[in-house]
Image (cartoon, rainbow, N blue to C red; front, side):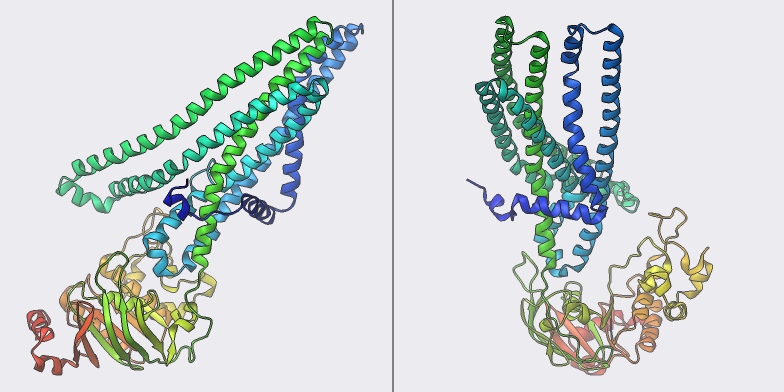
Length: 604
């Protein structure tokens, strides 16, 4: 019986996965790669056969009565042929291995595209992250796991099967029952190994979960920015305890998987030993009865021994195929998951123009939560309107923004853009109308120019880039940098890269939003890293820069409210107060209380 976890995992036909992997390899590396693969299979069968037959050939030549010189020349030619074939086999195997490796690495682009095209809400969910982790295993767990190993094990299986066919024909001509004995014993061994591999499936799932936690701990310890807190708060003991638990869990997983393999190996060794005793006893009897000579005896002994090796190779290869097929399943499952389009196909009715955005009874609840983050919210944002969205932390402001710009879909209710239900609009086209500066600011470790334009250098408008940086009040800082706007940020890729301060990063994100030049601009806590006075000055700049745009400013600090047409005060996912600054101050509600508390910082 399959466990519930096994039943949840999507399965695809093995032959489909093999077809997809090999056709993908042919497209990526060229059809000639498959021809090289075929040549490698032939050479991998022929060369070992000739090497195995060498002792028999030597005995035959020595008893042939030929001249010693001729015998020597024949043997020398035989050995040289073997060496040449060995070299060719090594070359072909190397070419195939390189092709598989490059193909696996190249598949990373497909995974990246799938991850970035996936619906953000689904991708961010626990289910989405688990599927992503499973897909990563198909590409990034090394040469011996995933699609590269899947292709390699299939080639090994083909080689072993071809060798078995050749050797079976030879053994079958000698004794039919001997062939049946060899096939029966090795078939039982194969079945035991397959059962052992199936038993490790649940251990493999446990490993993914535990290793993810272990990798998180390892990553956090090694991040320099975390070092301050770890030292000041003496957190090493806590981390050490967690490391110990994760290490023990990994060791437990490894031990259980190893026991399955060891038990199957012991059973196979015992059965193989019994088989060899019967077979070699039969061959010795045949020779003593004069039915075969010494040369034939050596040849058959080599064939029988090699037959067992081919069967073992086939067993291991099939086990490897089954094992790595799970990674192919998970990879394809993620691609299907990421390919689901939750939007429509219609274009925005008036792209690049001012829009009316209307929310009708919109609610949103995060996965695993019992309460809505946004609850039964009805709101209309008029074209060109300036809105301040304020409230305490956790009020639902950022969640509302992710709903507005299409990153989240309402759990209930509808969102309309110029009267169009956004579920019928292409998500890609819809998001072109929004530029958002989120509160979690960071820079990619590329050039400053790349971080602003998010375009290739040849597609970046230099005047537009400079204007965006000037408007974001970052141009003077750019002029101080070693390579100006082409200076690399951070040191992950370029050791000479520079790091920007928190305030500079927020200005960089603002420059990015300005460069995109969309009709709707949303600034989510864009001045959190600035002091109150600098924040107030920056909001004055925001107003100037977004004069001809629909703008939404989010903050739990209130310097953004003085120039806005409308202020929305949120509590527990609902808009509890609405109006301009004067109206809300007259109301003497939560907004007025918050403003009076903060007014001293803004010179009010």
